[in-house]
Length: 292
Image 1: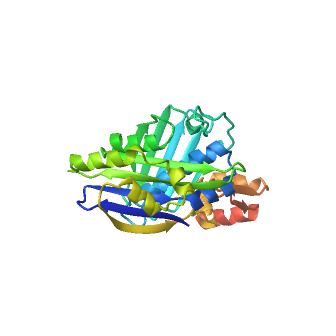
Image 2: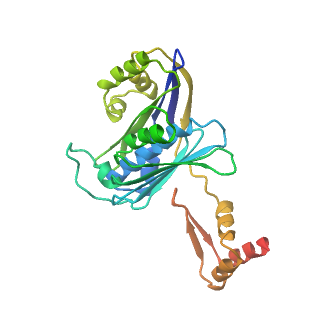
Image 3: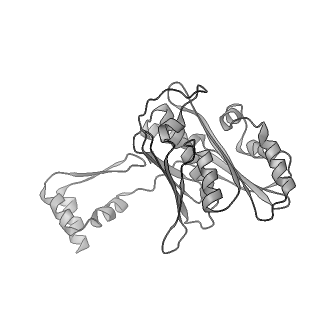
């Protein structure tokens, strides 16, 4: 299970959400079997969605991050509930490109440096909140930071990381998000900046044995912080036969009749977990009867 912790400074002027999402990203890799660079990119976006998910207030709220870049991987989608349980998929899961100039997986090259990040929050209103910002980096963490600055006018720092083993399995994954609250004093900002100057990468910290709590404390080391809460999270898909049936019915009676008359089984695959739902002509006819 992944672990997510939240801390706030003693004076209530800033907070940090820190997450170890290793198990979440491992499960994603086991399901989708992407290439290494796509695992790193989608893993970062999944981590961001989990972190942003636990910041939602309602227990039934959810958040969707969609990254539409001009890179060869195409669109990325990550969805999280308010407990940080996440799921995701990518348009092109096999992308083979050279390492970047630092000898690391070229996430920017897979995602692209032009396009848009869409953030959709379903918080129980008639219409979801949708925020859109341009991709400024393709490294994802910088794009999340930019989203908060531009769309929500909230000064933030985001760090994300996924370490992929040579056999393409996931070694570790996680990240953190620091946000300044209204009225945050300059000395707190300066203290955070100093703490982050020489902080190791997220994957370095996780692979050396640091926990989500340890990372939060290290990122805010010059400040007194208090734990607000902690939670466990997993890769969780909420698909079901009932949901698929509802989706098929929404295509309309004429579409269902065409499916039934074809005498060919209708197969519907979930993008998030790759589960396949099979409907025979008889099943489709039952859906038609039930929808009349």
